[in-house]
Length: 204
Image (tube, rainbow, N blue to C red; front, side, top):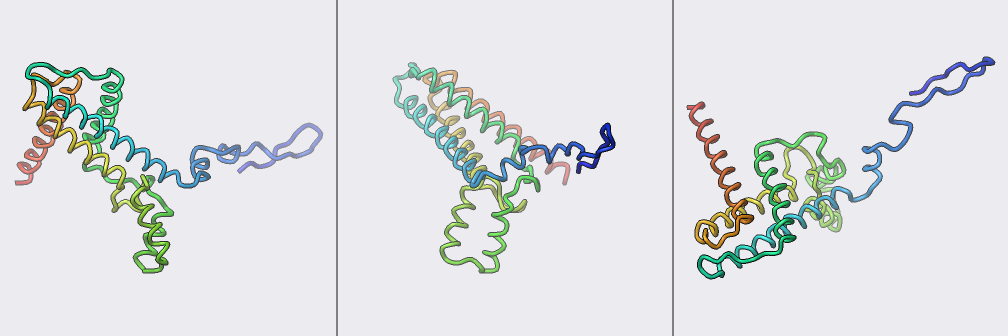
């Protein structure tokens, strides 16, 4: 809070306010945008589906290509697919096992969740609640899943796993750019398996 400061002549004027009161900060700005969490969720769903669509097309072309002849793909398409694969792959490698923080929850959704548990929502409100729960990037509390994030992680795992299978079955027809996803996913799997057996050994 700003206090009073003296100026020549004995008059007192309000001192400059603190940083939070001088303007709309990032946190204040986001609180003024309705449906922001849902918008983020929709974008993440769209990115995940785009990633799946790209690699479904790649896998179909690779599987139907003549033996020993890799298909030719648009550099723009491959670049976009690789960028999405990199982001989702990093999330797959890092997010597993990391709990949601208190700062990453949707407070409004939490209130609706509490009302739903007490059966205080009207029939129309229940439909809106379930839609918000499905689309909101931030979950209602730290013990609940974020469905857009969950969808992205599972989409990556399934698509990357399928790409790895196609690569192993059609290695001669798989371009290097597509091969990179299969190799990266195989590395993640090996790391997870190694960690799992390491933990089970320590706990024995």
